[in-house]
Structure formats: C-alpha cells, structure tokens
Length: 81
Image 1: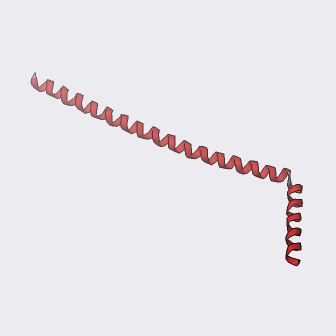
Image 2: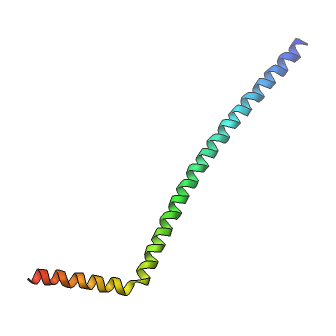
Image 3: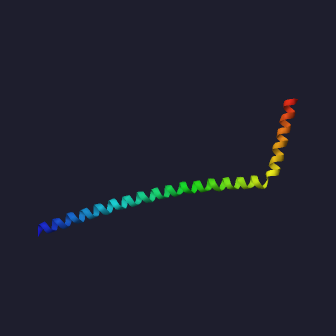
C-alpha cells in the first residue's frame, strides 16, 4: 500500500510541476504578445501620420509650391545682394 501511495504522490508532484511550468510559459507568452502588439500599434501610428502628412501635402500642394518659390526668391535676392 505504501508503494502505491508514493507512486500517486510522485505523480501528483510531477503534475503540479508541469502545471506550474505551463503557467509560467503562458505568462511569458502573454507578455511577449503584449509587447509585440505594442510594436505593431506603434508601426500603425507612424504609417497613419505619414499618410496624413502626404494627404495635407497633396491638398495644399499649390500653397506649398508658392511658399517654396517665395523663399527661393528671397534667398536668391539675398545672395545677389
């Protein structure tokens, strides 16, 4: 009877150890997933900002071109004296 009790005790301890290791692995996986998602979110944010800047540049392209021309003329006038 003592041998059976020891067998079940060892089996139960092994099961507890495996459950604890699985919990640690699951927690690690969740932390990595969270960090990965944060990186993906940051990337999406950068892409959205670039799209907005490009859209504004397209919408106001004439005004921007006029502004650059005016700055260029001022620089040329300053260089030519």
